[in-house]
Length: 446
Image (cartoon, rainbow, N blue to C red):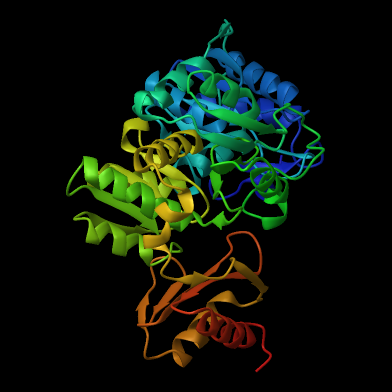
Protein backbone atom coordinates (compact mmCIF):
# COMPACT_ATOMS: atom_id res chain seq x y z
CA UNK A 1 0.00 0.00 0.00
CA UNK A 2 1.61 3.25 -1.19
CA UNK A 3 -0.14 6.27 0.28
CA UNK A 4 2.56 8.92 -0.25
CA UNK A 5 0.34 10.93 -2.60
CA UNK A 6 -2.55 11.28 -0.13
CA UNK A 7 -0.60 12.08 3.05
CA UNK A 8 -0.56 15.88 3.16
CA UNK A 9 0.93 18.25 5.72
CA UNK A 10 -2.10 18.21 8.05
CA UNK A 11 -4.38 15.44 6.81
CA UNK A 12 -4.99 12.65 4.33
CA UNK A 13 -6.72 13.68 1.14
CA UNK A 14 -7.31 12.19 -2.31
CA UNK A 15 -9.73 11.27 -5.05
CA UNK A 16 -12.16 8.40 -4.35
CA UNK A 17 -11.75 5.57 -5.23
CA UNK A 18 -8.46 5.90 -7.14
CA UNK A 19 -6.41 7.43 -4.29
CA UNK A 20 -8.59 6.65 -1.28
CA UNK A 21 -10.98 3.72 -0.82
CA UNK A 22 -12.53 1.52 1.87
CA UNK A 23 -9.49 -0.77 2.02
CA UNK A 24 -7.16 2.13 2.72
CA UNK A 25 -9.63 3.55 5.24
CA UNK A 26 -9.66 0.22 7.11
CA UNK A 27 -5.85 0.14 7.19
CA UNK A 28 -5.74 3.67 8.58
CA UNK A 29 -8.40 2.77 11.14
CA UNK A 30 -6.14 0.02 12.44
CA UNK A 31 -3.10 2.31 12.31
CA UNK A 32 -4.78 5.23 14.08
CA UNK A 33 -6.18 2.96 16.79
CA UNK A 34 -2.69 1.53 17.31
CA UNK A 35 -1.08 4.99 17.40
CA UNK A 36 -3.36 6.65 19.97
CA UNK A 37 -3.39 5.71 23.66
CA UNK A 38 -7.14 5.99 24.20
CA UNK A 39 -9.38 2.91 24.11
CA UNK A 40 -12.19 4.75 22.28
CA UNK A 41 -12.18 6.77 19.04
CA UNK A 42 -14.90 9.12 17.79
CA UNK A 43 -15.65 9.04 14.06
CA UNK A 44 -17.46 11.85 12.24
CA UNK A 45 -18.02 12.58 8.58
CA UNK A 46 -19.26 15.23 6.16
CA UNK A 47 -21.94 15.09 3.45
CA UNK A 48 -19.77 13.68 0.64
CA UNK A 49 -21.24 10.64 -1.08
CA UNK A 50 -18.22 8.51 -0.15
CA UNK A 51 -18.09 9.57 3.51
CA UNK A 52 -20.47 6.99 5.06
CA UNK A 53 -18.74 3.98 3.51
CA UNK A 54 -15.23 5.28 4.20
CA UNK A 55 -16.02 6.09 7.83
CA UNK A 56 -17.68 2.67 8.28
CA UNK A 57 -14.58 0.94 6.89
CA UNK A 58 -12.35 2.99 9.18
CA UNK A 59 -14.47 2.00 12.19
CA UNK A 60 -14.15 -1.67 11.25
CA UNK A 61 -10.39 -1.21 11.30
CA UNK A 62 -10.53 0.35 14.76
CA UNK A 63 -12.67 -2.39 16.29
CA UNK A 64 -10.60 -5.15 14.66
CA UNK A 65 -7.63 -4.20 16.84
CA UNK A 66 -9.79 -4.21 19.97
CA UNK A 67 -10.59 -0.53 20.42
CA UNK A 68 -14.05 0.99 20.63
CA UNK A 69 -15.83 3.35 18.25
CA UNK A 70 -18.32 6.13 18.95
CA UNK A 71 -20.10 7.13 15.75
CA UNK A 72 -20.92 10.84 15.58
CA UNK A 73 -22.37 10.66 12.07
CA UNK A 74 -22.76 13.93 10.16
CA UNK A 75 -20.83 16.73 11.87
CA UNK A 76 -18.79 19.78 10.83
CA UNK A 77 -15.04 19.62 11.36
CA UNK A 78 -15.03 22.26 14.09
CA UNK A 79 -17.49 20.08 16.05
CA UNK A 80 -15.02 17.19 15.67
CA UNK A 81 -12.24 19.33 17.18
CA UNK A 82 -14.61 20.38 19.97
CA UNK A 83 -15.49 16.74 20.70
CA UNK A 84 -11.80 15.79 20.97
CA UNK A 85 -11.43 18.50 23.60
CA UNK A 86 -14.67 18.04 25.53
CA UNK A 87 -14.55 14.24 25.74
CA UNK A 88 -10.73 13.99 25.79
CA UNK A 89 -10.83 11.36 23.04
CA UNK A 90 -9.16 11.00 19.64
CA UNK A 91 -11.36 11.92 16.69
CA UNK A 92 -11.16 11.23 12.97
CA UNK A 93 -13.18 13.42 10.63
CA UNK A 94 -13.90 12.23 7.10
CA UNK A 95 -13.88 15.30 4.85
CA UNK A 96 -11.97 16.93 2.02
CA UNK A 97 -13.01 20.39 3.22
CA UNK A 98 -13.48 22.65 0.20
CA UNK A 99 -12.20 20.21 -2.45
CA UNK A 100 -14.50 19.03 -5.30
CA UNK A 101 -17.05 16.30 -4.72
CA UNK A 102 -14.94 13.35 -5.90
CA UNK A 103 -12.39 14.03 -3.16
CA UNK A 104 -12.41 12.82 0.44
CA UNK A 105 -9.95 12.59 3.31
CA UNK A 106 -9.26 12.14 7.00
CA UNK A 107 -8.43 14.78 9.59
CA UNK A 108 -6.96 13.27 12.74
CA UNK A 109 -7.13 14.90 16.18
CA UNK A 110 -5.78 13.37 19.38
CA UNK A 111 -7.42 13.51 22.80
CA UNK A 112 -7.62 17.05 24.17
CA UNK A 113 -8.01 18.50 20.64
CA UNK A 114 -4.28 18.05 20.03
CA UNK A 115 -3.64 18.35 16.26
CA UNK A 116 -1.98 15.55 14.33
CA UNK A 117 0.06 16.54 11.28
CA UNK A 118 3.18 15.40 9.49
CA UNK A 119 5.38 16.72 12.28
CA UNK A 120 3.13 15.47 15.08
CA UNK A 121 2.20 11.85 14.39
CA UNK A 122 0.78 11.60 10.88
CA UNK A 123 3.95 10.02 9.49
CA UNK A 124 3.89 7.49 12.35
CA UNK A 125 0.29 6.57 11.47
CA UNK A 126 1.29 6.26 7.81
CA UNK A 127 4.19 3.94 8.72
CA UNK A 128 1.95 1.73 10.88
CA UNK A 129 -0.56 1.51 8.01
CA UNK A 130 2.08 0.65 5.42
CA UNK A 131 3.86 -1.92 7.58
CA UNK A 132 0.62 -3.32 9.04
CA UNK A 133 2.25 -2.93 12.43
CA UNK A 134 -0.72 -3.81 14.63
CA UNK A 135 -2.13 -6.73 16.56
CA UNK A 136 -5.56 -8.09 15.65
CA UNK A 137 -7.79 -8.51 18.71
CA UNK A 138 -9.33 -11.81 19.69
CA UNK A 139 -12.37 -9.84 20.89
CA UNK A 140 -13.32 -6.90 18.62
CA UNK A 141 -14.15 -3.52 20.09
CA UNK A 142 -17.71 -2.22 20.35
CA UNK A 143 -19.51 0.41 18.26
CA UNK A 144 -21.95 2.90 19.79
CA UNK A 145 -23.34 6.30 18.81
CA UNK A 146 -22.63 9.74 20.27
CA UNK A 147 -24.52 13.04 19.84
CA UNK A 148 -22.20 15.98 19.16
CA UNK A 149 -23.87 18.65 17.02
CA UNK A 150 -26.41 19.97 19.57
CA UNK A 151 -23.78 19.89 22.32
CA UNK A 152 -21.40 21.81 20.09
CA UNK A 153 -24.02 24.41 19.14
CA UNK A 154 -24.75 25.04 22.84
CA UNK A 155 -21.01 25.43 23.48
CA UNK A 156 -20.57 27.87 20.59
CA UNK A 157 -23.51 30.00 21.75
CA UNK A 158 -22.02 30.08 25.25
CA UNK A 159 -19.05 31.98 23.79
CA UNK A 160 -21.21 35.11 23.34
CA UNK A 161 -23.92 36.94 25.32
CA UNK A 162 -27.07 36.03 23.39
CA UNK A 163 -29.00 38.82 25.14
CA UNK A 164 -26.80 41.38 23.36
CA UNK A 165 -27.63 40.13 19.86
CA UNK A 166 -29.88 42.43 17.83
CA UNK A 167 -32.47 41.17 15.31
CA UNK A 168 -30.02 41.31 12.42
CA UNK A 169 -30.84 40.23 8.87
CA UNK A 170 -28.13 37.79 7.73
CA UNK A 171 -27.56 35.89 4.47
CA UNK A 172 -25.70 32.60 4.96
CA UNK A 173 -24.22 30.40 2.24
CA UNK A 174 -23.12 26.92 3.35
CA UNK A 175 -22.43 25.63 -0.17
CA UNK A 176 -24.42 22.40 0.39
CA UNK A 177 -21.85 21.59 3.08
CA UNK A 178 -21.95 20.87 6.79
CA UNK A 179 -22.90 24.39 7.80
CA UNK A 180 -26.38 23.60 6.52
CA UNK A 181 -26.81 21.08 9.32
CA UNK A 182 -25.73 23.51 12.03
CA UNK A 183 -27.03 26.96 11.10
CA UNK A 184 -30.77 26.28 11.63
CA UNK A 185 -30.01 24.98 15.13
CA UNK A 186 -27.93 28.07 15.93
CA UNK A 187 -30.32 30.69 14.61
CA UNK A 188 -33.36 29.06 16.21
CA UNK A 189 -31.86 30.45 19.42
CA UNK A 190 -31.03 33.96 18.14
CA UNK A 191 -33.39 36.86 17.29
CA UNK A 192 -31.95 37.13 13.76
CA UNK A 193 -33.64 36.58 10.41
CA UNK A 194 -31.58 34.48 8.01
CA UNK A 195 -31.57 34.12 4.23
CA UNK A 196 -30.33 30.54 3.71
CA UNK A 197 -28.37 29.69 0.57
CA UNK A 198 -27.69 26.04 -0.26
CA UNK A 199 -28.38 24.61 3.20
CA UNK A 200 -29.33 21.19 1.77
CA UNK A 201 -26.54 18.69 2.45
CA UNK A 202 -25.51 17.49 -1.01
CA UNK A 203 -22.25 15.70 -1.65
CA UNK A 204 -22.45 16.52 -5.37
CA UNK A 205 -22.14 20.25 -4.51
CA UNK A 206 -24.47 21.30 -7.33
CA UNK A 207 -24.33 25.07 -6.86
CA UNK A 208 -20.66 25.99 -6.43
CA UNK A 209 -17.52 24.61 -4.84
CA UNK A 210 -17.72 25.09 -1.06
CA UNK A 211 -14.54 27.20 -1.14
CA UNK A 212 -15.47 30.77 -0.19
CA UNK A 213 -11.90 32.07 -0.31
CA UNK A 214 -12.34 32.03 -4.11
CA UNK A 215 -14.31 35.18 -5.11
CA UNK A 216 -16.45 33.34 -7.68
CA UNK A 217 -17.95 31.16 -4.94
CA UNK A 218 -19.43 34.06 -2.95
CA UNK A 219 -21.19 35.84 -5.82
CA UNK A 220 -24.57 34.28 -4.94
CA UNK A 221 -24.13 35.42 -1.35
CA UNK A 222 -23.17 38.96 -2.39
CA UNK A 223 -26.24 39.15 -4.63
CA UNK A 224 -28.48 37.94 -1.79
CA UNK A 225 -27.05 40.49 0.67
CA UNK A 226 -27.77 43.29 -1.80
CA UNK A 227 -31.20 41.98 -2.87
CA UNK A 228 -32.47 41.51 0.68
CA UNK A 229 -30.58 44.49 2.14
CA UNK A 230 -28.98 42.24 4.74
CA UNK A 231 -26.79 43.46 7.59
CA UNK A 232 -24.08 40.98 6.57
CA UNK A 233 -23.38 37.76 4.73
CA UNK A 234 -21.48 34.71 6.00
CA UNK A 235 -20.06 31.90 3.88
CA UNK A 236 -18.77 28.59 5.21
CA UNK A 237 -16.53 26.08 3.48
CA UNK A 238 -17.54 22.46 2.90
CA UNK A 239 -16.74 21.13 6.37
CA UNK A 240 -17.78 24.44 7.99
CA UNK A 241 -14.63 25.09 10.02
CA UNK A 242 -13.88 28.31 8.09
CA UNK A 243 -16.06 31.42 7.86
CA UNK A 244 -15.87 34.34 5.43
CA UNK A 245 -17.77 37.61 5.69
CA UNK A 246 -19.56 40.04 3.36
CA UNK A 247 -20.50 43.52 4.58
CA UNK A 248 -23.92 45.12 4.11
CA UNK A 249 -22.76 46.74 0.86
CA UNK A 250 -21.72 43.40 -0.64
CA UNK A 251 -18.01 43.91 -0.03
CA UNK A 252 -15.77 40.90 0.62
CA UNK A 253 -13.88 41.19 3.90
CA UNK A 254 -10.44 39.65 4.25
CA UNK A 255 -9.79 37.20 7.06
CA UNK A 256 -6.99 39.50 8.26
CA UNK A 257 -9.53 42.31 8.87
CA UNK A 258 -11.81 39.90 10.75
CA UNK A 259 -8.82 38.70 12.80
CA UNK A 260 -8.04 42.32 13.74
CA UNK A 261 -11.71 42.97 14.60
CA UNK A 262 -11.95 39.92 16.87
CA UNK A 263 -8.53 40.65 18.39
CA UNK A 264 -9.74 44.11 19.45
CA UNK A 265 -12.84 42.55 21.00
CA UNK A 266 -10.80 39.90 22.83
CA UNK A 267 -8.36 42.47 24.21
CA UNK A 268 -11.18 44.66 25.52
CA UNK A 269 -12.36 41.67 27.57
CA UNK A 270 -8.90 40.25 28.39
CA UNK A 271 -6.41 43.15 28.64
CA UNK A 272 -2.82 42.27 27.85
CA UNK A 273 -3.65 38.89 26.30
CA UNK A 274 -1.42 37.13 23.78
CA UNK A 275 -2.81 36.70 20.26
CA UNK A 276 -1.27 34.75 17.39
CA UNK A 277 -1.45 35.46 13.67
CA UNK A 278 0.20 33.71 10.75
CA UNK A 279 2.97 35.03 8.53
CA UNK A 280 0.58 35.78 5.66
CA UNK A 281 -1.79 37.99 7.64
CA UNK A 282 -1.95 41.70 6.98
CA UNK A 283 0.27 44.00 9.03
CA UNK A 284 -2.96 45.48 10.43
CA UNK A 285 -3.27 42.40 12.66
CA UNK A 286 -0.12 42.86 14.80
CA UNK A 287 -0.61 46.63 14.69
CA UNK A 288 -4.13 46.24 16.12
CA UNK A 289 -3.04 43.75 18.78
CA UNK A 290 -0.23 46.02 19.96
CA UNK A 291 -2.34 49.19 19.79
CA UNK A 292 -4.84 47.59 22.18
CA UNK A 293 -2.22 46.42 24.66
CA UNK A 294 -1.86 42.81 23.57
CA UNK A 295 1.17 40.71 22.71
CA UNK A 296 1.31 39.72 19.02
CA UNK A 297 3.12 36.54 18.00
CA UNK A 298 3.70 35.52 14.38
CA UNK A 299 3.52 31.82 13.54
CA UNK A 300 3.75 29.68 10.42
CA UNK A 301 0.66 28.89 8.37
CA UNK A 302 -1.05 25.71 9.60
CA UNK A 303 -3.34 24.76 12.47
CA UNK A 304 -0.85 22.39 14.10
CA UNK A 305 1.71 25.21 14.46
CA UNK A 306 -0.91 27.68 15.67
CA UNK A 307 -2.37 25.35 18.31
CA UNK A 308 1.07 24.34 19.59
CA UNK A 309 2.13 27.97 20.02
CA UNK A 310 -1.18 28.83 21.66
CA UNK A 311 -0.51 26.14 24.23
CA UNK A 312 3.08 27.24 24.82
CA UNK A 313 2.23 30.94 25.18
CA UNK A 314 -1.22 30.79 26.76
CA UNK A 315 -2.60 32.76 23.80
CA UNK A 316 -6.32 33.41 23.99
CA UNK A 317 -7.03 33.79 20.27
CA UNK A 318 -5.41 33.23 16.87
CA UNK A 319 -6.36 34.03 13.30
CA UNK A 320 -5.17 32.91 9.88
CA UNK A 321 -5.47 34.59 6.48
CA UNK A 322 -7.38 31.52 5.26
CA UNK A 323 -10.43 32.06 7.49
CA UNK A 324 -9.44 29.84 10.43
CA UNK A 325 -10.07 31.38 13.89
CA UNK A 326 -8.83 29.66 17.06
CA UNK A 327 -10.16 30.20 20.58
CA UNK A 328 -8.69 29.23 23.94
CA UNK A 329 -12.24 28.65 25.20
CA UNK A 330 -12.72 26.12 22.38
CA UNK A 331 -9.82 23.88 23.42
CA UNK A 332 -7.56 26.08 21.24
CA UNK A 333 -9.34 24.69 18.19
CA UNK A 334 -10.61 26.67 15.23
CA UNK A 335 -14.30 27.37 14.71
CA UNK A 336 -15.95 29.27 11.89
CA UNK A 337 -19.20 29.25 13.85
CA UNK A 338 -17.74 30.87 16.97
CA UNK A 339 -16.04 33.54 14.84
CA UNK A 340 -19.36 34.26 13.12
CA UNK A 341 -21.19 34.55 16.45
CA UNK A 342 -18.60 36.97 17.83
CA UNK A 343 -18.88 39.19 14.73
CA UNK A 344 -22.69 39.15 15.07
CA UNK A 345 -22.39 40.14 18.72
CA UNK A 346 -19.94 42.96 17.87
CA UNK A 347 -22.22 44.40 15.15
CA UNK A 348 -25.11 44.29 17.62
CA UNK A 349 -23.16 45.99 20.41
CA UNK A 350 -21.75 48.70 18.14
CA UNK A 351 -25.19 49.26 16.59
CA UNK A 352 -23.59 50.40 13.36
CA UNK A 353 -23.12 48.82 9.91
CA UNK A 354 -20.35 46.27 9.53
CA UNK A 355 -18.57 48.40 6.92
CA UNK A 356 -18.32 51.25 9.45
CA UNK A 357 -17.11 48.88 12.15
CA UNK A 358 -14.24 47.83 9.91
CA UNK A 359 -13.07 51.25 8.68
CA UNK A 360 -10.37 51.57 11.34
CA UNK A 361 -8.71 48.40 10.05
CA UNK A 362 -8.77 49.27 6.34
CA UNK A 363 -5.30 50.76 6.13
CA UNK A 364 -3.71 48.46 3.56
CA UNK A 365 -4.59 47.41 0.01
CA UNK A 366 -3.90 43.73 -0.58
CA UNK A 367 -3.88 41.31 -3.50
CA UNK A 368 -5.50 37.89 -3.55
CA UNK A 369 -2.96 35.15 -2.85
CA UNK A 370 -1.29 34.56 -6.22
CA UNK A 371 0.42 31.32 -7.28
CA UNK A 372 3.29 30.98 -9.77
CA UNK A 373 4.81 27.75 -11.06
CA UNK A 374 8.47 27.67 -10.01
CA UNK A 375 10.60 24.55 -10.31
CA UNK A 376 13.33 25.66 -7.85
CA UNK A 377 11.38 27.44 -5.14
CA UNK A 378 14.32 27.86 -2.74
CA UNK A 379 16.50 29.41 -5.44
CA UNK A 380 13.76 31.90 -6.34
CA UNK A 381 13.35 32.97 -2.70
CA UNK A 382 17.13 33.47 -2.50
CA UNK A 383 17.01 35.53 -5.70
CA UNK A 384 14.33 37.80 -4.20
CA UNK A 385 16.41 38.22 -1.04
CA UNK A 386 19.31 39.32 -3.25
CA UNK A 387 17.15 41.91 -5.02
CA UNK A 388 15.20 43.36 -2.07
CA UNK A 389 18.20 43.87 0.18
CA UNK A 390 16.80 46.99 1.87
CA UNK A 391 13.81 45.11 3.32
CA UNK A 392 13.38 43.89 6.86
CA UNK A 393 13.29 40.14 6.28
CA UNK A 394 11.57 37.41 8.28
CA UNK A 395 12.03 33.75 7.29
CA UNK A 396 9.60 32.07 9.67
CA UNK A 397 7.35 30.88 6.83
CA UNK A 398 8.84 31.35 3.39
CA UNK A 399 10.24 34.88 3.27
CA UNK A 400 8.45 38.06 4.37
CA UNK A 401 9.86 41.35 3.05
CA UNK A 402 8.75 44.38 5.06
CA UNK A 403 9.07 48.01 3.92
CA UNK A 404 7.59 51.18 5.40
CA UNK A 405 4.91 51.42 2.69
CA UNK A 406 4.41 47.80 1.57
CA UNK A 407 5.18 44.21 2.49
CA UNK A 408 5.07 40.88 0.72
CA UNK A 409 5.48 37.21 1.56
CA UNK A 410 6.55 34.39 -0.75
CA UNK A 411 6.22 30.85 0.51
CA UNK A 412 6.46 27.48 -1.19
CA UNK A 413 3.60 25.04 -1.55
CA UNK A 414 4.07 21.80 0.37
CA UNK A 415 2.78 19.68 -2.49
CA UNK A 416 3.30 21.53 -5.78
CA UNK A 417 6.10 23.38 -7.63
CA UNK A 418 4.36 26.62 -6.73
CA UNK A 419 5.35 29.84 -4.94
CA UNK A 420 2.52 31.76 -3.27
CA UNK A 421 2.68 35.56 -3.22
CA UNK A 422 0.81 37.73 -0.73
CA UNK A 423 1.33 41.49 -0.91
CA UNK A 424 -0.18 44.64 0.55
CA UNK A 425 0.64 48.34 0.30
CA UNK A 426 -0.53 51.69 1.62
CA UNK A 427 -2.04 52.62 -1.77
CA UNK A 428 -3.68 50.68 -4.62
CA UNK A 429 -1.16 52.15 -7.06
CA UNK A 430 1.86 50.93 -5.09
CA UNK A 431 0.17 47.55 -4.59
CA UNK A 432 -0.33 47.11 -8.32
CA UNK A 433 3.14 48.37 -9.21
CA UNK A 434 4.93 46.08 -6.76
CA UNK A 435 2.77 43.07 -7.61
CA UNK A 436 3.64 43.43 -11.31
CA UNK A 437 7.32 43.92 -10.48
CA UNK A 438 7.62 40.90 -8.15
CA UNK A 439 5.58 38.55 -10.34
CA UNK A 440 7.78 39.53 -13.29
CA UNK A 441 10.83 38.37 -11.33
CA UNK A 442 9.19 35.16 -10.08
CA UNK A 443 7.85 34.23 -13.52
CA UNK A 444 11.08 35.11 -15.32
CA UNK A 445 9.65 37.92 -17.44
CA UNK A 446 12.26 40.51 -16.53
